[in-house]
Length: 142
Image 1: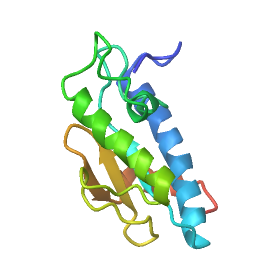
Image 2: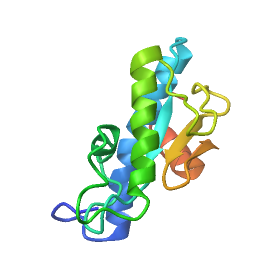
Image 3: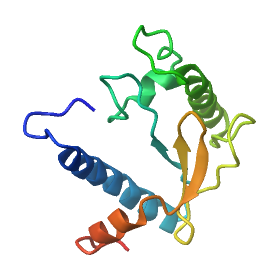
């Protein structure tokens, strides 16, 4: 991740990342609570040596223009295929599942399934529970 001014350490960068993730999880919880089908994902591939898994980096993968960059990381082409196919499936059907990824369940309040996009994509239940629980102490939605 290219650190904004003042975010020079891994701890600083991880703190910012957790804030973004927490807000997304809270949105998913609210939508799931009211019965909306929600598919939560986390993009974990380091896109290049200078652009780690930062906010919105997955968009270039969704539109299949990440792997041709000269500084693309190994495996970027594989991740590009699964992300792009998930976005296409979601746009067509409202469900991002396709044969290139593990079964991606709708987000629910009990399991909290999250698809982690990486060279080997996987579904993780309750991704980063320690960070989630820490944020929940200061939040109204539980």
